[in-house]
Length: 430
Image (cartoon, rainbow, N blue to C red; front, side):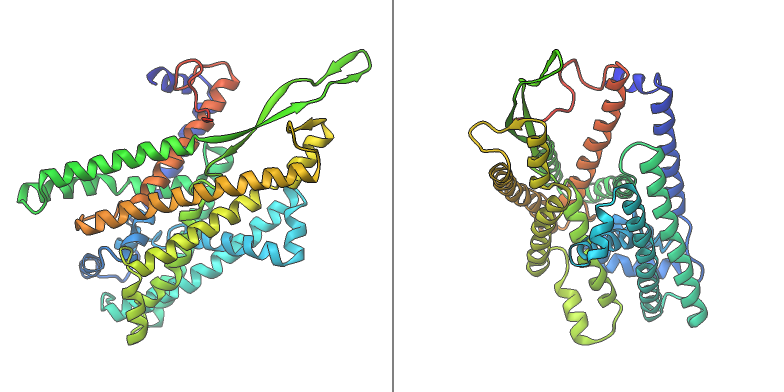
């Protein structure tokens, strides 16, 4: 492992990408500490202390504590994720967007441009809702339209800048920029959570046995996540022999790897953003029935968890269907003389792959739902003073595995040893 980290700095391009990524993540964390003007910080902190364990606490976790301080990055990256979800859903029903999605790089750039516009629109709406809510909380020094416009402008500009940071990390750094920004926000809360836990242990509010039990729970969940995220269902594929000129091609046996969790950390992130948007606005509307709905949507409530699990399962299947097309895979295999033993090429192969993919996606959806919900419920039952449940663990471990895999690929492409011993790199299991 140590040798693997040393090898990073022996490859100039990889070294540049890693340092570039760290630099932009540091810029993001600095921005999370820059407050929005016109806010009483002490009064706002008191409001968030009362909102601990609610959706505001969950939203604050994804923003890396920026919402609690109402920094210029208070909205975080969630408007961008919500806009991405809306565009992907519209791609299925709007023919123009569907054509763009099939046009390759040019179409992808156009959809990305639409996503940026949608991000700005959602940021303006959310920023205005937050500014009105802050005035009702009585944490604003000089309320009025000047404060509202300034807050909307500040928060929208902050989200646009985060969106730019994420795109730059993806293009010039290492790993997925948006996921790494969420990862950095969650990890940044860990030192504060650890210090609060030790403080509660010294005062006797939390027992040592409870802390050890929670630590053991996190270790078990991390182990399960690593095991399942690396798991694959390998479909055997045989290529027929072909003679081209005087050379013979094909004839080898290989496999088609299907990950148990094809969609990765996308479903819980999408599900959280979908639930957060209306629920966060509801917290700022002073109408009795709206407030009762907001109270019922706390992360440890049955209603919230049922809706959350439903969205996770939906996005597991939806994202898998968007990113993996069995018909295209079957056609490509047929063009290159490949076939699955015992399955006729063409439509039969596509149906077989689709059937296998549906089964493992269902298992993956149940796994993601259990990891995201069960630890969160248990932690809520023991009144843990911070929000670091299964969703956060899944995102942190999943993003870490994906980033390390990309670093491994850069190393192995240049004949450097990775983080593991020979033959022990991040490969899937049967």
